[in-house]
Length: 76
Image (cartoon, rainbow, N blue to C red; front, side, top):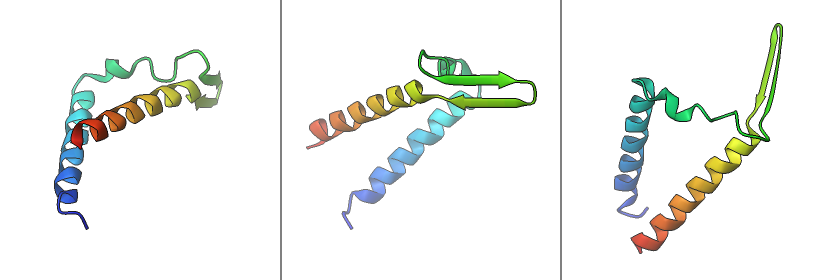
């Protein structure tokens, strides 16, 4: 196991905790766009709701991929 894996996991966990606290304590409007982009499927009927945020998940995937690529380029 690489020696820096523990530190990396700790920092990722800390970052997720901070992001979660920010969203929980009032920053929920930051994700108001999630599920409302063109291409996201929303069906709401009495007694039934269905959400399929397809385009939103593609955007999240692209952002995470770009961040990981940038981290690899800057990290070594």
